[in-house]
Picture 1 (cartoon, one colour):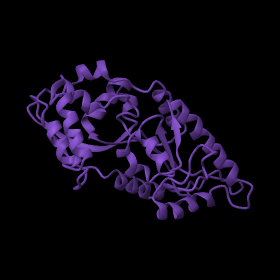
Picture 2 (cartoon, helix red, strand yellow):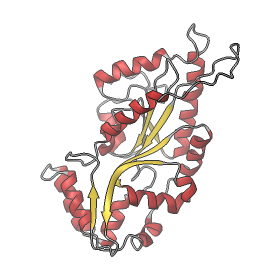
Picture 3 (cartoon, one colour):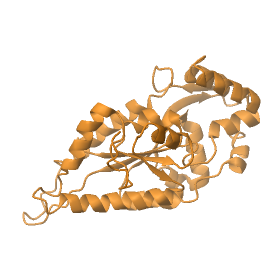
Picture 4 (cartoon, helix red, strand yellow):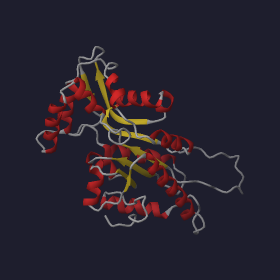
Length: 292
C-alpha cells in the first residue's frame, strides 16, 4: 500500500518527490568474478570436466538448465559449512562493490540480487564477504534449497515451474508492480539491471537501464543485437552513471511545466519497452538513443 502522507507538511513547502530507482544485479560473474556453484562443483562435486560436459548439454538444447542444475547440485556430498572453506579462498568480489552498495544505502536505493543460484549459498557468501549487518540490507531473489545437515543431499527448491527454475523476468515484473505501489503520484519506478551473461537477458529485457560487464557474453549479445547498454569494469563505473542519471532526472523534471514528481520520459520508456522488450535507456548518452 502507498505510504501515507504526513499532514504536518506546510502547504507552501515545495514537493521534492523523486522517481524510485531500483537496482537488480546478477551475482555470479557480476558481483563476484567467479561462479559460486562452479567453485563448489569443481571442488566437492562432479568436477570441472563433468561440469563442462553438462554445461554443453544446456547450450545444445539436449537438456534443460533446471535438469542439469539438479544433477550438479546433487553431486555435492559435503556439509554446508565445510563447503565454504574453498569459497573463501577462491571467490573474488568486485573491488568497488561494497562502496557502491554503501552509496545505495545512503541514497535509499533498493539493491537486489537476482540469481539462478541457491539463496542459502548466496546469503552465506555475502555474510562472509560483507558482514551480516550489511548483507542483511541486500534482498536476494533466488531459488531456495534443502541441504541435509550431513551434506548428503543438496536439492534446489525452484521459484518457478519452468525449465529455468527461476524466471528472472517474472521476478523483475513482480518487483516493478510492488514498487509502483509505493511510488509518488505521477512517477513509476526506474529499473536498473546489472549482469554479465546471456542467461541474464530475461531480466535485462525488463530493465530501463542496462549495465553489462565489459568483455563478457552479455555485452557481446548487446552489440550483436544493437541493444543499448553501458559497459562497466567495476561497480565504481556504475555508481558514476547512476548518479548522473539521478541528477539528470532532477533537471529534466523541474522547470518544464510539469511538477517535479512527473517524468514524461519514463512513461515513454514503458510504452516503447512493452513493444520491443529490450532496455530502452542506456546510461551512456552516446548510445542512449540507439534504436533497438
